[in-house]
Length: 551
Image (cartoon, rainbow, N blue to C red; front, side, top):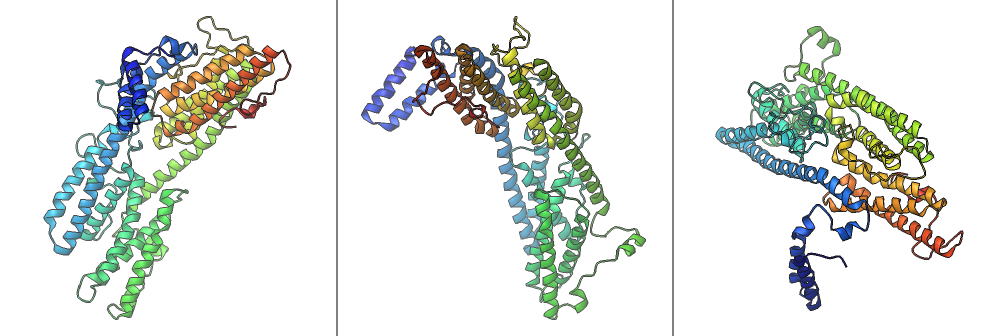
């Protein structure tokens, strides 16, 4: 019996009448009108609904004010990147088709036009800040409206791309390298003009990983072209020289890639397939020699001895060995950064977890010290690494931030932050305050804060267990109100990040268990018994394993 405005009462009556007549399309239309009414879109709850939980109205208003625009902004930016990715994919396919036409018919005007269109589209994507996840340098939880009008946004060269653009750029490298090899007989350098934006503020279009992945894909393209040309080796005088040069180029590329210490990942799996491209070309040359089209010496490929190459002091005429060596050095440096970050994250995550244990024991001094140690680890040790290499923002670093947020939220929920006369000396009576993201000094993403907020309900559930053993009905009621407020707020935010959506079900289970605990506490009080076995749902066991999301 919630008092809706007259317009919503009309919509509800309309829905009820449509259901009674089983007119399903009209019922859906009525539901749509209800969802579009101003009451549903209002960011404040009615007085009747907010009275169900004292904290719900305030928490809903504050959280939605901070996160509604942010979530919408991130979703729109991702959709724009996806749209650009589709456009880029279409341009790549047209360019590849133009290459095939140019090879078979010799028409270069078609491929020139498609290449100009593709290069222009690629430059537009690279120079658009909205195509990148520049979270490390944008400021975390800053509103999308903040910072506008303060000059152009500087995007880190290594900032991750959005909307599936990265695989398309690998295809761009592959096709540009294939065109260059078909015309020049050499591997395209990573410092080629087509891979750098023109103008004063030059920006690399590709990353080192893009170049290596594109070169590996080029090896498979050369094997396909070699098989195609081998079919016409009897009539095509340049078929055998091309196959021979392609075989030598793939062999040299494989030798260069052998110098890399690839860690397990997509690039390592792509590298493992390079040997099959070389085997295909060597098999083609062998079969052509068996057919008598080439000499026996051409059917075999002898690698130069390492000492001979060292005496010559010259790189391969078809491979930019120096540029690839520079990529290898940068890759090794980034691998060291990653290993250092993973090792350091263990210390920060351990401090954050021990903070929660100390809070459950009521050791506020140790909890504050551990929380400060975790924050110092993040700001002094981890953040400089992430700022240098933004691709490390997700994974271990994000886990530490989420764990820190959970500990910080639980600490303020229990003891407050010292404002508004809140006490920090009574561990048996929680304050029940939920800290907002803007009140945390670290730069947080949507996943970091909302993920920690979901985890907070698990710790509140464990705290409720201790209050249940002490027969503290008011304490359990506060736990239930807080968890229910968080759950409803997350649902009201609408579309949430994928990692947060996975935790919603755990929050719902925590709320359900707290409702049962509160019910049994009321039954104990009314019956005057020391124990009460409820038949409502499953029986409640006061164990900490009943609550939580991460064990």
